[in-house]
Amino acid sequence: MTGDLLLLAVDDPLAVTVTGAIRTGDLTTLRRLLTAHPGLATARLVDHVGGAPGATSRTLLHVVTDWPGRFPHGAATVATLVAAGGDVDARFAGPHRETPLHWAASCDDVDVVDALLDAGADIEAAGGVIAGGTPLADARAFAQWRAAYRLVVRGARTTLTDAATLGLLDRVERACTGVVPPSADEIDAAFWGACHGGRQSCAGYLWERGARLNWIPPWEHRTALDAAVRRGATELVVWLRARGGVTAAERDRQPPGPTP
Image (tube, rainbow, N blue to C red; front, side, top):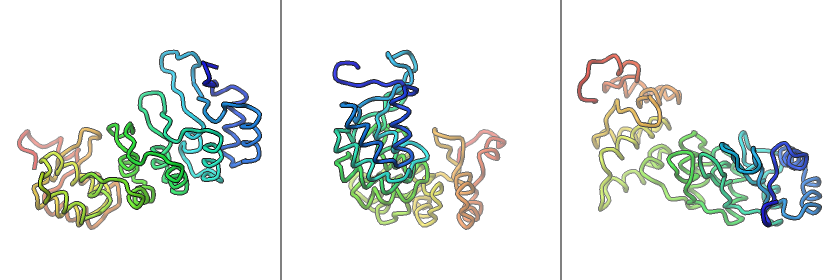
């Protein structure tokens, strides 16, 4: 215990038991443990108790949203933990600060996304592994399309890159024709996102607005063509090739000069 906060090493017998109950959807055992151990709903599972260098910690709501997600009775587990005092906006403590909603979005766990939002989770919470962004940024970056669209339906704000990656052409057009037009870098990132999502209509619109075909983003060494190939977007790959699109490997072999 630290003050009123219960800290459990991940290999503590109680941590192992409650984690197993969550991952198997054993609500009877979970409720029994929550009743028998006051403070368990807000406990943090720590890989090195005492805050040793490199330690990380998470809550039980992070356990139910952890990869690969979609554990049995996930939504009911969320409701059970919240009713017992679990914080839907608790932060992972480690190299990033994601909430359970970030993790559910990254697992494409739509039922748990809904359960967390119904319990009051912040849909715009920052701190994601993707540039410190929102749950929607995590979902679209990891190609978790069902969760991404669900977040949009539930009211998540979309950036230009979010909209382009999800194929929301009307939002892309509004973002590009607004009072403050996007920068060239934002156009490039959104174009790459459109190809990552296999969204040819958005890619075409952004290309006409000056997007660079063979721009390589800072987050991974892939061109838009590489992203489209990975997505299996055959028609988009042909479209990019016809306009001079190359892979990162091909671009690296080219002599120095302006990037098209």
